[in-house]
Every structure is written in structure tokens, then in C-alpha cells.
Image 1 (cartoon, rainbow, N blue to C red):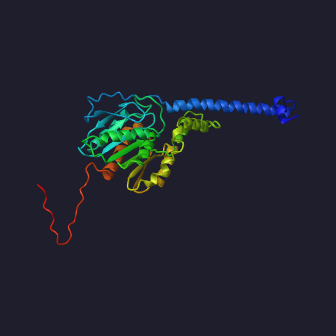
Image 2 (cartoon, rainbow, N blue to C red):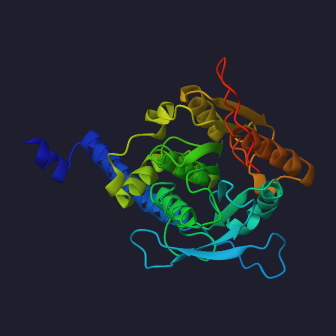
Image 3 (cartoon, rainbow, N blue to C red):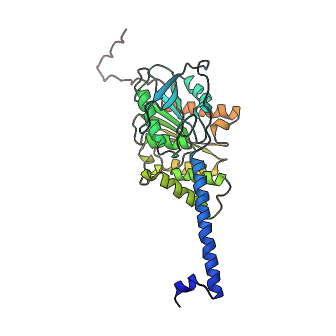
Length: 328
């Protein structure tokens, strides 16, 4: 009797046991894949957070700016532009996963008070926007579209931008900075190397991450959804090529997984680089005193690394040369 026949019509006790085990394994894998698929959908379609704030009475004289992202209809994205010193660089704030532009307004004010132009907007699947998050793949295109739009204004420096981002926003900011010379300074809070790492964190937060193959199944589903990016290298592969672009890495001790990923990214980055280790992560949920300390750290970094007004180069005349008379 062949093995196939024995498995089809088991007669021996151990064959029957093997068939039962294989059946249980099959249905367990099938159930895991189904649950992982549902979890992945929930993760990439986060619950929207409102950005419905009246700008008419908000200090800082913001303008609503429409911009177009490749693959979307014209004007599909909207952001708030807060003007600073005319001709100053612009700081673009990239919110985190399950957050929105409306939750960053205190950081906006802190930067605008120091004469920076500031721009905030909502990523796909956040705020009032539809779609699914790709945890940074497509969001980097949104950052580029925002930079392109703001650079066309006549009241900003079109070649000097700073980016701040938290987790999802940090990945998108770094991904764009690696191929955009207009980005002159970066603040990366809780940045990761691969988008699928955020999927793992999302699954673990549901409490089922410990089940065998659950995380791997969810990551595989996410990679299928984003098949167009299958050959994209990790951010760490190019972060050391940002020579001359100062980066501040912010690592939170109460978020050990993202904190460890951020530390590893910091170690791979080129100079000039800085590291700040804070007790609590997620800026939008910090208590007021910690939030002010955080804002001061970010503002100080940009003031040092990307001043609102460029310092003119001082030319020392050579021996025997009369210095030029100042213009009146």
C-alpha cells in the first residue's frame, strides 16, 4: 500500500494521528492568515483624527494651501502654511501614525515665533484624507509634493527646508531627504528602517503578536499590498550618504522597540548628527512641561543648524587690499 493511499484512507493509529495533526495545522495556518489579513486592514486604515480647526481666529496668520500628489487628483491635499520671516527656510512637520496636523500646532507656534515658515498637512488615511497608509513609501511622495508647492512661493527660501517627523512622518521625511538636496536639516523622532517594522508594532499592540506566524503573516500581507516597493532598500542603506545634512535623532525610553531602531539608525548616520534620549515618546501626548522642553530642543536644533536668516560670508581682505566701503 502506498503512502498516499494510507493518508487518504488511514487504517493504522499513527497514520490517523498524523492526518489529524496535519488537518489542525492546515486550519491553524488558514485561520492565522485570515486574522492577519483583517489586522493588516485595520492597521493600514487607521481611525481618522479630526483636523477641523478654525484658522480664522488662530494666531500666526496661516494660509490654507492646496497641493497635488502624483496619482491623486489635483488639489487633493491641503495644508496650513504659517508665514515667518520673508525669505526664511520652511520647516515641514510630518505627523505620526494615527495623528494629524491639528495636533502639532504648539510646535508650529514655537517654530514660527523664531521666524521660520512652517507647513503642516495630513498624510493619506489621516485627518480628512481617504486611502491607506503605506508607512512611509507613498508618504514620502506627499512630502516631496509639499516641498515642491511651498518652494514656488515668493516669500520663502526655495532651497532651504527643514523636516521634523515622528515614526511614520520620520520615515517619510528621511526617505525624501535622501534624494532631495533642498532638505538641509532633519529631526527624526522614533524613526524605523522598514515600513513592515511598523506593521509588527501594530500587530503586537493588538495583543495577538505572540501567536505563531501572526506577525509574519501580517507583514507578508502588507508587502503584497505594497508590491511596487518590493525592491526598495532600507533607509539605513543610504542614511550615511547625507553628508553635511545635520540630523537630530530622538529616542524615547518608554518605546523600546522604536527606540532601538532609532539608535541603530543614529549609529549608521554620517556627521553632523545628534542624539536626544527622552523619557516619554509621542510628542502630542506629552504633558505641558515635557512638551515645552521638547519644543525648545527642536527649535534650538533648527536655530543652530538651519538659521532663519543665512549668515553672510565674511571676506577677509588680503594684505595690501583696501576693504570695500559699505553700501548705503
